[in-house]
Length: 316
Image (cartoon, rainbow, N blue to C red; front, side):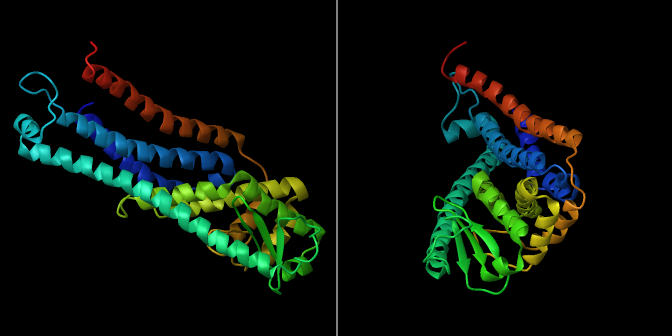
């Protein structure tokens, strides 16, 4: 690994954390291929993290310059003597920034996971207590809880003890097909564990410095998981019942950590239901781009570092 390699990975990390997500968030083609687009988003996020670490490790390898005896230096004084103080300071600073990003990623992942699960556990207990159908099994499933509210509300609580939460207004205002569409939509979230995808993006978003990260990535991924759940509902009931159900629940809110059927993306989702169909060519290109973004940098990092490791352990 050398300094130009470190600069390439640093530039790649910055591009994958900011400008590229911003451009992708403005595109409309992901609405036609949400699964492929979500894979691409995940590849971009993971490649950004790998590139940031690769840049820091490449810089760290520059600190291990040959000493007077020909062996890699490990003492700061020897490194300064070999590199010069200004260059040594630059290398150490970049390496420290990399460590900070790694620490922030671990901390953000733990914090998001713990806070989200505590919030869901409290809300799960609350809806179990307030459930209007607690005395008799629900004909809609044992995971369904019904709240006493005239407003149409529908959301799900992921986790080990999953819940689908409806309101009396939802049961009153939706017919059987519309209700089936909503239930299928919410259970698709639970089955696919879309909550874990969102948590991962929240953690990556918090790990990178605010000046370089894209604010639109998380919102785009939130829309994509809703589109995937919509597609599951369409396969079960068709587009019209789901569209009517989404409009009815458009104003419903959900607690943090839950996944609601309605929300600010309702208009985009209903418009998409009027033009069903998947662009398979675009989907294939998205999968290919995801593979290139993720695999090529990984290979480019792995081979030089395996060579460097062999050198350090004394193998020719």
